[in-house]
Amino acid sequence: MNPTQSQEGDRSPVAARPLLEVRTISCNYELERAVFDLSLTVNRGEQVCLLGPSGCGKTTVLRAIAGFHPVLTGGIFINDQQVSAVGAMVPPEARRVGMVFQDHALFPHLSVRQNIASGLRQFSERESTQAVGELLERMGLVYHADRYPHELSGGQQQRVALARALAPKPLLLLMDEPFSSLDQELRERMGQEVSDMLKESDITCVMVTHDQNDAFALGDMVGVMADGAIVQWDTPYNLYHRPRDHFVADFIGNGIFLAGNLASDRRVTTALGDLDSDTVLDWTQGSPVEVLIRPDDVVHDPQGSIQARVMRRAFKGAEIMYTLRTANHITLLALFPSHANFDIGDEVSVRLEVDHLVAFARGSESG
Image (tube, rainbow, N blue to C red; front, side, top):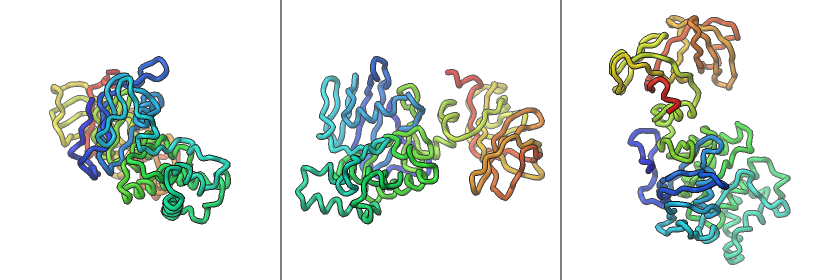
């Protein structure tokens, strides 16, 4: 599969010239095939993410790009140079690739300053001192330069790991679940900070993660992976609003699938009313389908025609996620502003407001 960039979405690539090209690679993990004929292109200055569940092959792809894992088919090119081919690999240290690991992998016996400088042995002392000083300033670590990793917070350790990877001025930055050890609030803030910093420095980056919030915070383009292949390569906006298949729709965001039947090429009839599509639905009239209903498609409306009971609630600050059960036993997820505060057992009136109708042939999740 050769992913192509979508014409719709909230963000577009920042450059047109490829820095990284992965061409139909296959890889094994231990004795089993983990990646199947996977291709992707990353332009200079672009930030992309491979997103998928555990075991989908995303980390194997990252390790192959870094030079830690061989390819069985295809090839990998960085800056127009082939660095991986069948039976031949340019070593990791010769690829000009920086790597940020899941556990940060900082040297516990070295200070922050020494950790950042650890990859600069080929630099002169003057060059090393200047590079480290610039990164300490950029990462907000000046006052922590002589501390050791165990004396730092999780966010500070993450900044040190990123500074160490950037110190040798790599052509390409690779990040493996870099925010997974941070709490939710901190990982959201760090994700945005890292994205802003990479854009300001025009750094090309590939990140792998299982967390869609991390992927959406950093990725200009995101490739959703399943079973060793990229299922959809698209903008975060399109992955959420225009998922290509049932797996992507189910994996990205929250929601439920509501059974219905095709009434026309732009309308689906469901137990909760008719839903209109802004695109043509390419099935014959009467076909059984299921429609993806996101929490933001369910609107609180005292005059709404759908009556439901609150079964669960999860406070999220400015919003509350409710699990609702309708009178005809359909479960809905709804995201309401916090000022619309309902308790478990309360009856609420809602309506469906589906701006982007996403429908699949019923039973397509097994295909």
